[in-house]
Amino acid sequence: MGEIEKLPPAAWALIAAAAGLGFGVSWLWRWYRQYSHRKSLRMAVIATGSDHVIDVLVPDGMGGGFHVDFLLLTSRGVLVVDLRDVQGNIFGGDQMAEWTVMDGPRRFTFTNPQSGLYDRIAAVKAISGEVPIEGRVVFTRRGRFPKGLPKWTLMIDALRAEFPAMEHNTEGAGFRESWDKIKGAVKPSYMTHMR
Image (cartoon, rainbow, N blue to C red; front, side, top):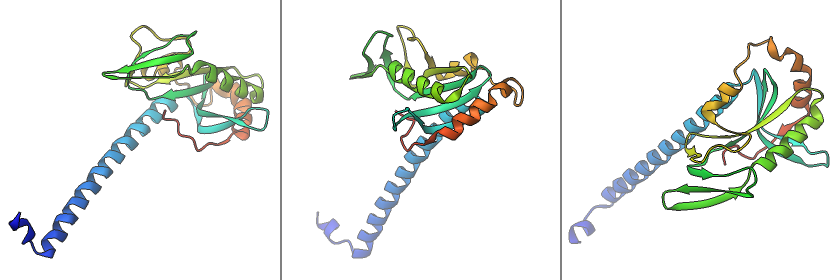
């Protein structure tokens, strides 16, 4: 203990600076990894459409709005995507009010996302006109459904298989007018699409 007390003030300043630098580098590395993860997820989702909007409020017809993570213009029409980044084994079904996640010793539940998806689809349909509107709850690779996927639920790797990328200016040309109408009606939402 006596040796530590004898350190000059400059040594204490160097120790504090090194600790602060280590903390700062660690924080920056964690931030960069999260940023890279979010960017790769965003790119995986938007690759499905020829055009997209991210994190928007769709008017609900009563003065409010529904947050939508992604709206994509696809070869089949407009796709509403609710992105979920949940880690662990997910147990959910169409008739279940809550879905359960088990990740080692952790266990938690969340509200069945299907009903919220139906509301978002209805809100987009109300402003879109005749374009077909579909919706999917998309889970990242960190989650697994050991008992099978519920209806309208996809893993992110299956998104492009179900909604193949379309050639620009070809298949979606008939949907462009409705798509522009949707884009004009939505407003930016400051809620994040990472839940």
